[in-house]
Image (tube, rainbow, N blue to C red; front, side, top):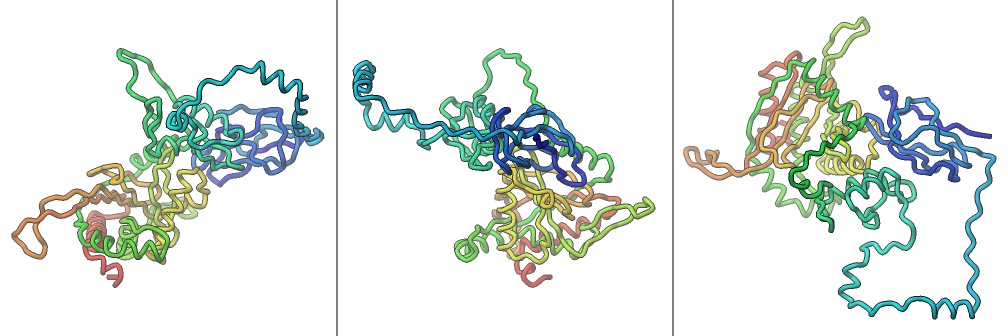
Length: 429
């Protein structure tokens, strides 16, 4: 009896995916519920389990695009589980002695320092389990898989794990850098390299182009003095982490400040939808589901903090940390990726001084944060004198079809006021 392996339903908007990797080789025995393949869609990467135990037969290759509901393989349940290989019988004494005499003598022992220098850091005690895609990527970048931590089923190393290792800041012995790029190509090289766009990258590209073509997008800028927030964070950072078990960053201040602005200007927290007759309507929300842009291994993702208006600073920091971890490991769910009413993106972590963020459809606005630089500004407590202050440029891109310029400017000023006077967040003013 053969049981088919069918691509399961993932979400309403997902109709197909790409087989990123088969976790079990063709012809191998698989246990029920063991992961057999990784399916990469335009939103998430998911593991598909075996519906039964038996011998696996592939009917679709890695890299193939498959529709939801299609059959990509089958499992022969009638096949018996292969017996584990028994340990080899010990050699007879005389055979062992002969083998010992005929074996080449080892070279002189190396010094301790030399031995340690060449020993693998993880000192594995068994075989390395990795997906074919992960093995291929590791080979291309000369990565020792002993040093990579697997997050797949049973500790299996996946593509995301290799990517995370590349981005971890480790420098490899062959000269490859942390982002996976090796040194510059050979002089006078005119080679052309092409890499297939992942479904996620294609989806992001499509949405960004759609945002620019369908929305009347404008951007307003302002600058904010980070002195008060930085002083507050410095005073309470250690106590905050001891009590809540998570670090106190700047993002929680901006999320709470954005909530203040969204409550004051509800159209910024809304978007254009359609009624039952297909006519455009303005949809607003009594809640603030704030999407946080995260640079994942395969591209930009925007997981959502639900009901940010009800969250404490600790809730926001914990939520962002959890979503960022899942994004790096490719474990975000559809529910965590959909339904945002407003987005925050922080290009400052990469050193961006100023940029124009693109809308995240169907949302009507997005806040862009940037790097903090000390600049000469007028001292607010002593007008007419100049002081150095840590300043950040802020940008709000908005859909002018639903949000007027005055509202967008006042929304951004609300955020500025909350950051420069954090007590406003506490007092809800």
